[in-house]
Amino acid sequence: MSTGKTAIVVGGGIGGLVTALELHRVGVSVRVFESVEEIKALGVGINLLPHAVRVLSELGLAEELERIGLPTAELIYFSKFGQKIWQEPRGVNAGYKWPQYSIHRGRLQMLLLQAVKEQLGEEAVVTGHHLSSFNISDDHVEAHFKNRKSGENIGAYRADILIAADGIHSVVRKHFYPNEGLPKFSGRILWRGVTEADPFLTGRSMIMSGYQDQKFVAYPICPETAATGRSLVNWIAELAVEGDAPARSDWNRKVNKEVFAPQFANWDFGWLNVPKIIEDAEFVYEFPMVDRDPLPQWTFGRVTLLGDAAHPMYPIGSNGASQAILDANALGNAIIEQTNLESALRVYEEARMEPTASIVRSNRKNGPEQVMQIVEERAPMGFGKLSDVVTQQELETIANKYKQIAGFDRQTLNSK
Image 1 (cartoon, rainbow, N blue to C red):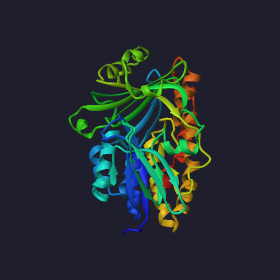
Image 2: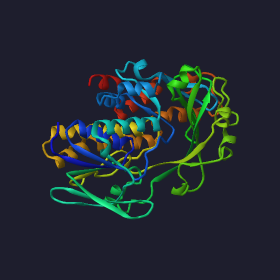
Image 3: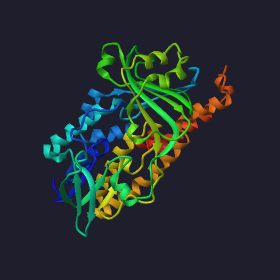
Image 4: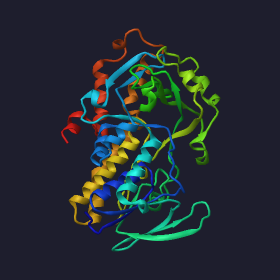
């Protein structure tokens, strides 16, 4: 099915590639333009929540997701002493129609890239093209690209609409909001790594321990490793730091573990040896925890923002990639419902702007992870009985409220 409509998608990350698949689904001819010369399987682990898995399944990717992702069985919050605070099943274990997957970000991106090339054709993804500027006319958008390394202008392309999925440092966002400045630094830095280790708890558990200023997250991400009786553990160590965020050129850079590892030296919980997990990682990457303020507008005529270009958020609640996927689905649905593409972009904005702004605001208050902060504040030396510190009702309310904010309340999602 072809409608004769055309789109340029700027950015070949998860959000941009899913957008291409969604637009193709509704009959729009798409080309994806990516700055890097070669899209590689970079990054560490992420979680795909059931509402995002639903979207990808409807795009025909369920079987491939099952092959490369590990279904998350449960989520458990612990104190800094390894004392259990809250435990809940996840994905199909929690009664959802779709799994929650722990998955390597790079493997997911490669899966999406392959799907785009197979469904839209090899020529649908154009690498080595960095957006330098664009013009909006009455009946089209013209995008101008350059080679980011040489600075050479390498062509202009026209389409009916332009979707900016070009990340937290979006060229398109900066065009419309030139005075916004750098992303907002939380005062916390994440150190990320992947370590092969013995399985912990169920072997498919996602755990978080600590509190706002010192936290450790771990979950397995590889079904092949799990099949051998071992576990490829994706982990994040997080600490509050003094001063400003590191310079942008240092983001995602490899660092010496001694920068942060000593702070976790005593975090051996028996069921998880945090110091050893850190020590056995081959590489560790540093990433300042940043976001941006919610915007009053994403859509400007024939151009709109999507994913991290629209609503970068703290990596709390397993939401970044999932929300970009939901954006793409909402955009595709809006195009089906509206005969006019500009109207469709406005309808998409209306559907997604406030829900994602709510998540940004909630994540700044620690989202569902605030249960760990409550325990730290009320029982900094640990507890004998959890019910003396926090009630079951408090814990349930926090967990359920976040699911509603983030759009994966089970009853609502399963009814779709």
